[in-house]
Every structure is written in C-alpha cells, then in structure tokens.
Image (tube, rainbow, N blue to C red; front, side, top):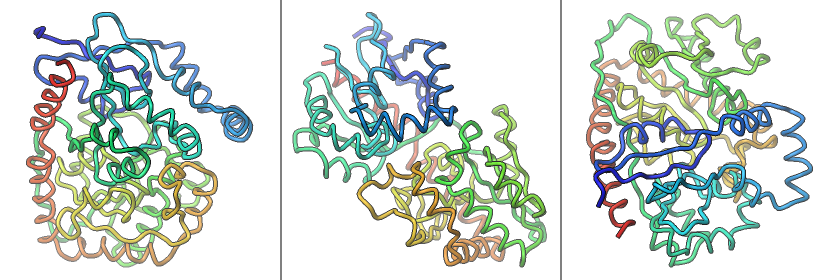
Length: 389
C-alpha cells in the first residue's frame, strides 16, 4: 500500500466536524478536496435568498424529483490520484471504492427532506448495494435503527456505528467561588439564523429568563446568529451576551472556560457542541430528542427533559422536519412545562457546586475514554484498509 493513500472528500462545504478529520487523518492516509468557489458562492447565495428558498420549497421541489439535482450540485468527480472516496452526503457513481459517513440521519441522503428521501429510497438503496460502496458509517444507535427501518439486510451488513470524536487535549478548569453566579452557554450557527429554533435557542432564552428571576447572578452567552425580532424581545433581560461574530480558536476556548454548562435544548444531538462541551468539562442540559441519550447520561454528564407534546418529534418525518415552517411555528409556542423542567435542571447545578464539579469531571472522562480520537482514527484506518483490499 502507498505511504500516503489519497482519500477524496467531495463536499463543497466542509462541516466543522469533518474539517477536524481532514486536518488529522488516519496514519498512512491524506484527504484531498476540490475547491469550486464560484459554485460554493452560488449555493450560499441561493440559501440566503428568501425568494429562491420559497421557489425551491413551494414550487420546484413539489413539481420535480430533485434528488438527482441535489446529488449533481453537491458532488464533483474525484481526482485520478484519489484511491478512495469518503462522502457525507452525495451518493457516488464512480468505479472506485467509497464509504458513506452519515453525520445525523439517513434523511440527509435525500437532502434532509423526508419526502425526497422516501420517493427515492429504492434508488438510494441500489446505490448503497453497489460493490463499490464498502461501508456505511453512522454516529448513533438512533441512526442505525432508522437505517434498519428503511433499508434491506444486505445494506445493513455494511452499516457500522463509529463513535464520533474530535482531536484535542482536555482543558484544565478553575474552580469557581460558590458565591459567583454560573454562566450558561448556548452554541448555534453564526451563519444561518434559520437554525436558531431547531437548536433550542428560544427554549434557552426562556429558561434563562425564568432562572434569572430566582438567581440574578446567572449569565447566558448566546454564541449564534439570533433573529432580530427575538433579540429585540430579550434586549432588556440583563446578563445575556450575544456573540454573533466569527472568533478565533483561542477566543472560542475562552468562551468555554467562562461557561459552566452547555444549555442546548434543541431537537437532536449537535456533534461539535457536545464534544467540545465534554472536552471543556461542561455538563449538557438538553431535550430528550433524537440521539441525545447516547451522548448525555442523566445526572452524570448532564440532564435532559422531555420535549413539548405540541412539537412534532413523534412523526415519521422527524428529525428531517426540524427546518420546516410547521416545526418552527410549533417551537414558537412556548411550553411552560418544558421551560420549568429545564430551569429546575439549571437550578440543580446552581445549588450544588459539588455536583457541577463532579459532572464536569465525568464529561472530561467521557471525552478521554468514550470519545477518544485515537480510537476513532485507528478504527477508521482499519475501515479504509479493508475498503482497498
């Protein structure tokens, strides 16, 4: 085998989680990508255009089968020197061995649209049955079970859970004075305000508002792009720090060090935010939604509470529906029971600093043991080797 085998990663936009892998590949391998700034700029402009988004979702997607178009837009043929392809979305139609890595749910194979996925399930299954498709990697049991629901046994023979991990050392935390208020951290997207609701931004703000009434020293860092109307709604609530600008790696580290708990009551698990929280010793307070229990151990590395009954998390389309207008509308109906439950979990940490320190240590232990990056890349190296034999 060559000293450095080239693995092609075909996506135009590289997820932060995948960038950490590209920068720190398995031994004996290196990743190659193809830059296409014009295409990338065009896609970004379309996503930011309300008219383009409306035309696509309301007319084009309902009239045509957009599956082929999605694949064509996001896939670029591999360079000759690449011996293996690793994809996190597009299905590969090349006579080269390839591996599919699903970052969240199988619905991502249909552009994160349940109906597009369902309409093209047979087509997707045929691609996954290709002898060139060597392995399908998923991050959670939740995703594994969804794959099992929609695909046949032959496909499932290729599916394997690969525990997610990011490189980095554990961060040494200073013990806070017990009279000092705790700081909650919410991590969202600074580029896409549309993700604010599905990541639990509104629930985070409402929980903070409630806990602030009883514990005025509590602070909240909102590291995300917050829709202007929502920001206006909470502008007079003291103790909120809105951080919407891009920051350096060192500045990001300081944000985690200033924080005590990651408050992420969203509608799924969020790989980078969860893993970075564990690395920095921040327990997670979240909702009991898709895959969360596999990351958050109740009372050990964090807390989770049941989501609202009026948010559609028990339908076939979930979690592909989290970016829909109907889902956003349901989230905007604040459920006081959920807010109360979240605030009680925050209160536990405020009142019991020994518990906070213990949970912080458990988070870092999980990062070191369960989410070991060396274990991940060693296993990935074995998978790459198998794919090339």
